[in-house]
Image (tube, rainbow, N blue to C red; front, top):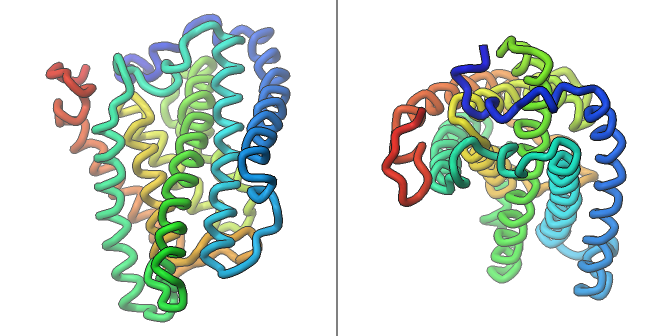
Amino acid sequence: MLAPFPFLQAVTERDRRWPRVAAMAAATPAAVLLLSLLFAIVLGTLTGGAMFEGAGGPRLQRSAVYVLQLGLGLGSMGLAVLLAARYVFGRPVVTWLTAAPCFRWRLLLAGAALTVLGVGVLMTGDLLLNPGSFQMPIFDPSSSLALKGFYALAVVAGLLVAATAEEAVFRGYLLQQTAAFTRNVWVLIAVNAAAFALAHLEFDPGALAARALAGAAFAWAALRLGGLEFAIGAHVATNLMIAFFQAPMLPDDPEVTGGLDETLIEVLLALYMVLVVELVRRSPRLMAPFGSTSSPA
């Protein structure tokens, strides 16, 4: 049943009408193309085209530029999907982000902090067993303090935009759109997890399993907490821990894994996520918007 999940209460009969679903399928690529082109022109003008040139120089610099480009691309996609959905289904954009009266920044920060704690423990165990498997980019002795500062700022900005866009598309629009056609919660989570894994276009079984587990955990967080805030914080924190301590993110690098089996790590992290989501759900302070003292529904 959908009743226990306020985040799905915005779904109406309009969301399951096939002409509107077809219109959304047609409008989304056009909106993505239009916004991507607009943002590219504006950003290219502001940076003199440097943002889209082949990045050279030190590895941290190349990674920083790549993450900013990734954030721009995914941000354009996420915004385009939400704007297209707003036009096609005729409801406020915020209904795909949260069921609360306003976006709960406190919940986002809680998701980030608790995820850093969990990922940090898993990474520490991996590091002890495989001391050579972590490149520690943020502590790279060959890079200047200025370069490491630029890298840190770039990956925080780029990954925050990218994670927000992915959550808006998968745990926002797609989760609610799937809910328009099924009331089985496990089907909702399975569809979301599979779509999230396949969308990354890495078809190695380990990578697919890892992404599917992450997608399932984020979908559970959205359903149980009534919005995307916690999942966005958890998503960006996971990526930041990789970018800061495991290896710089670059398009031509193979996926970096530690000595522990990637799937086992994702299983442990998913279980941890479910646990902390259930704990957070019992905290009226975290569940309420800033300035509100109301308890969660």
